Each structure stands twice: as structure tokens, then as C-alpha cells.
Image (cartoon, rainbow, N blue to C red; front, side, top):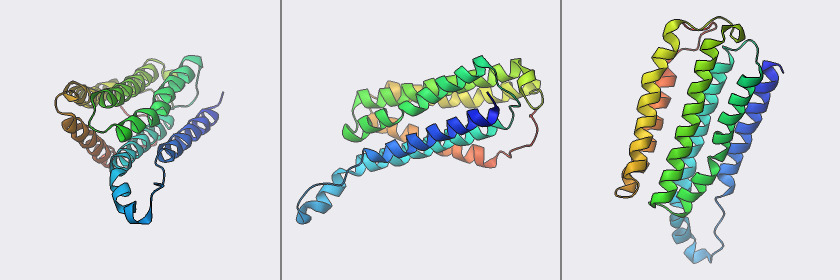
Length: 199
């Protein structure tokens, strides 16, 4: 399988996931006089949609950058990519739960667990590429994986904290998810994309 074919498949999955996110938000079927009230009740679903939309977009950006480091793919890398896409494709489900059952413990936990699983799988992909230089445009330098570790630890640690707080202070969990997203967007916006594998 070529890298272009794998990237095209992955892009298709991302497009479907983004589409599924919005499909759960339905136009209220109420009398015109009660439309404003009905739209207000939709706010939790709308806000979780926005949060998940940008999380999926961020995952797509990361996937796009990693794909530029890859020269060829093998079986294990394909399946690692598929497992990662599995957790990404699950995101619409906890998003719908958060929207329909706002500030409830179980939806917050399910959301956080899925994000952690996606991040852990993404880190495994990075480690696999580091240990298989023949798959890369150029071998990843010894410091490449090491520089990724603090970001993964902070992100997953924050998600774990959000899960722990879900029962007592679920609003804080929402804020943690949003804050981590903003931090990651800023971080990746400041990171220049290079044409060769980083050292």
C-alpha cells in the first residue's frame, strides 16, 4: 500500500467524523414562540460539537504532519494507523453523550478515555517510526520522540484529571478539555512544518 493511499483513506475518515458530529444536532420541532427556548436547550450540544470539531481537526493536522515524515508503510504501521482512526471515529459518540447529558459523570469519563486512547496510539505511531527508519523520509533524530513526551504527558495527565473530577466538579472537566485544546492549537500553530524528518 502506498503512503498516498493510506493518507487518502485517513482523510476520508476525518471528513466522515466531522460530518457525523453535526448530524446529532437537530432542528427543534416546536412552536415558533418557543424556538428561542428550544435553541437555548441546544447549547450543550452546540458547544460540545465545537469542542469536538476542533479536536478532530487538530488530530487531522497532526496526521498530516506525520504523513510527511513517512516514505513507505508496512503492515504494523497500517494497523497502528487504523487503531488510531478507530478512536478518532468514536469521538461523535461521547460528543453526543456530552450534549444530551451535560455535566454528567459518565459522558465526561467516556469522552476523556477516548481522547487518551487516541493520544496513546498516536504516540505508539511516533515510537514505531523512530524505531523503523526505513519507513521515514529521513531517520528521526534521537531527540524527536523525547521532545514529544512532555506534551503527551501533559495532555493525557490533564485528561486524566478531567476524568477524576467528572463526579465532583464536571464543569471543571469541560474547562480542562477546552484549555488543553487551546494549548495544543497554539503549540502546533507555532511549530513550523519541515520538509525533512526532524532531529
